[in-house]
Length: 390
Image (cartoon, rainbow, N blue to C red):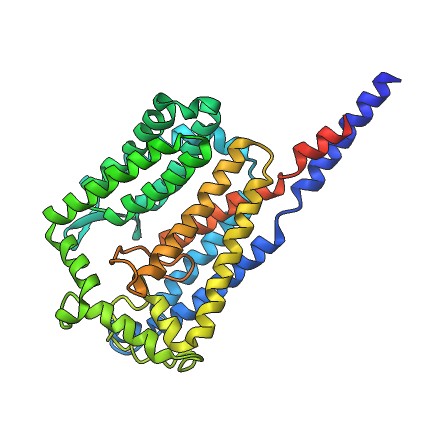
């Protein structure tokens, strides 16, 4: 009788495993696809004038075509990754971390220099930023360390030195690349993950103080960084140079009014607003769709982020919880920082708006990361249901 009950429990566990494998979090997936679809539409609208200018007024879809290809690649990666169990990522954390550091260092030797910064590698005609991959591997490694450290994360040796050493392995090459925006973004995500892991708040507060000191010193030593702060505080003092982009962004937002000028009818996109299809695409959204359209898009981002955190809370183990929370936090921080910059609530950081801003590597990697979150949602109730059978 006992043997039959054991066999029955094993068969039911196997059956439940296959059933829960097929159930990704559909609300999260639908929200993601809506944001991607709206993002591609707005990218075309924001980039059409720039595309015509760059191609001698022959092609208006230059940027949309490249972004569309990367979107297809990203969706394919998301579909495949959504079926990869979290255990695989746990095993690959350290190897991928090592590969990321090598890629970041290779940028310093083989990378392309743009505006005095080396951040891009060109392989077979394809240009990508290793820093996008490094963001994922940092989150992945932090999730593994959280599980490895367990309750010891509250101690300075593990919760500060352990996480801090791993973080420096990524941040030092980024500093050599002069990639301040990536450093700031990864630092903020790391703090959130360390808090989730159990690092004592007093160490996090001390780290925040050190970060403030670093920013002050950096602004004092780096002239262009100081110019950004001055332009943020008083853009009207230099409307033709340092304050130009901020003022043009605010003009676009203000001229949109409540309902907007209408899709495709932006005026600022006609080469008045620099990077109108990249970092400042949200200004074009406000101009064309108005306050109501902007609120809808912000609501979609908020719903996606909250749903992602719900998936993290329902994950089957601690590693999956922290991994999902870290990936969702990455999207959340990017979104908040981008919106803050476009509306001049924050100094310019160069951080793009996920799923909207032009950038093939970022889009493909973001979609692949969301595939990891969907994979975690696929297995989220497996352990609880198996325990209920025993």
